[in-house]
Amino acid sequence: MKENFFKIASITVIFMLFIFSCSEKLADDLVHRAYELRMDGKADAAQVLLEQAIKKDSADAAAWFELARTKLNIGLGDPHKLIAGLDDMQHTINKAVEIDSNNVIYLFFKGYVCYTRIYATYQGLSKIQVEKVAKETVSTFESVLRLEPNYYEAKLFLVELLKMLPSNVGGDSAKAEKYTRDLEKADVVFGAKARELVMPRDADYIKFWQNIEKNHQDNADVYEALGRAYLQKGDIEQAGKCFDKAIQLNAEKNTLYVDLGRYYMMQFMQNRENLDSLAPLIIKEFETFLKSKPAPIKPVKAYVIGMLAKIYLFQGDKEKGDELQKEATALDPNFSKAFAIPGQILFDPPDKISRFFSYFSRPF
Image (cartoon, rainbow, N blue to C red; front, side, top):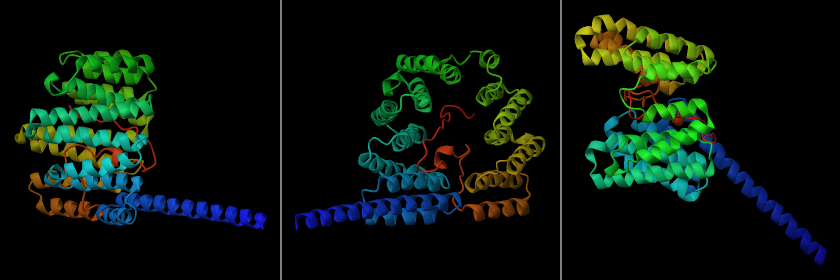
């Protein structure tokens, strides 16, 4: 009798574990399905799916996380809605972190959302509000580092934020310097990226990266950084050569073609009389990206086609401009209208640690 009892109890436990494992697998599958919808340009459908999942299980941290990314993805399609929805987006990612506070993926994205709030609303926030959000941003990225000390991208965000903000709203140059030295000890290239962020504005950034290049001629990040230094100086020819070298070393850096196109667009925006000479250059860089490998994912492809549409419309070619707008919208109705390229942090798989860093304080 006793043996039967233990046998039944064992079977019951195994059955319950099996049910739990299956329900967890279904939840993971649902989050990945929502992610794939978004990659297919269907962020609205992804949002509906995730909100339904959270109604069924409000403790599904992965669904909260993916919903936060989906909301940011959709928000980029309408900057006014993005600004208005930042508090809601913050609440959404906070829920993921509250449920799973040791998940470095969720924490890193929370830090990014916090930083976005500062950048997007800096002029409209009071000193107290900026200081509060800045404190939360720093605290979040530091939590990331406690879990993953070698998360160099998190340290870079900290260096930029602490150096960029005035001391009366959370900036701390001494702390930025400390993180910079930590990175310099850990990794030469990441250390150089951090050092560049704290260098004086009148420093020779080109010479700085040329010195790094001498011993790192197989590093795509070095050529990307050197190219950006040339862009800051307006030397587009040398910037293009460095970007070409970076792409040769790492084909996934093909978005650098878009950065070249964006650079020409900035020149046009600063002096609209130069449109006739700059438009062909902008179009060439954007089209080079669209034809490059690896093929761009739909949200980024739609963004670039939308940028192309603007150029044709500026040129007065309404037919071509409208045609491209329709093509971009067909690919992704929520394609980004921001000037910056949508960040890879939105497009990494939901269970992958994102190795994303993007300057908030620079256009390139």
